[in-house]
Image (cartoon, rainbow, N blue to C red; front, top):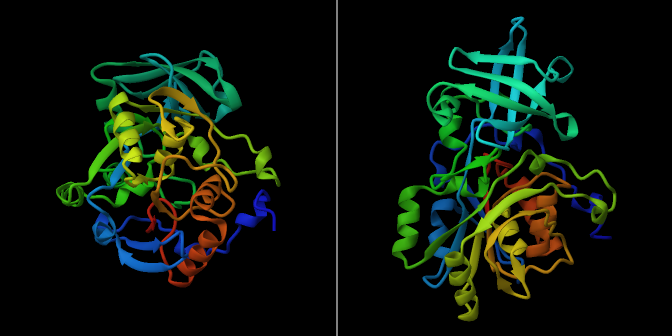
Length: 343
């Protein structure tokens, strides 16, 4: 079996195992613990994660914040339209996806409410538009009021106001994502306090998750796949602390694939650089993982780049076996689903 074949990362998942809603209590999710050296598996609740951590460990999280990026408005004719914010270009201009695209050409005006309007001023890549917004008051306050959470396509329901809280990590700070770094959804503030009280340092990096995170691999050979680009950042302070910890032989545990991709995209010969850049890093078996020693992650879609990433870190056979067991044990999958701890 070739690990560069997309089909190698397929597994059968009954649709009823795709979580449509979060657990009532974040840290009550189940957690499959995988020892990547032995392949041994344990089943726990996420709130028991502290039992698997050492005081010398460093946990790294992605503190990006999901914006309520789906907006519904009307053209001046009254026709209904949808605008999906992708990336802020200037203070009042965004790259967006618009529906219906053929009816929203340059010059078209959109009314969301009396205080929030927009105009299409240019075309963008892949059928998108550059949209200029006009508003009275605070842009982000208005967005929180009228915007909708952009839930993933496999969640087959409309978003609610409750999702504005549940589809956000408790440590989210830096606005810019249109999808949550979902491995972090299991943490609560009391659990994080407990982790810190054990002597474990929690560090923050930023990667703004784009819609490309849901883009399927369309090539049979995964090496031919073109990754989407996402903006990420690591401060000097965080890079220094991680480099010192690596020298001391301490474990670096990443919360999520976005944190992993950020750290590994700034890695150079085992050393972590700091800075801000756009990354298209694609990690799959055969690629060298330089920084992380542990990974907290959710269960990922079959044949996705994220399945390939976790296989690169934990070993292909370990991951495929863990997923087989997770299905047998009826774990909840994907964004609002259960967790995996790989050490």
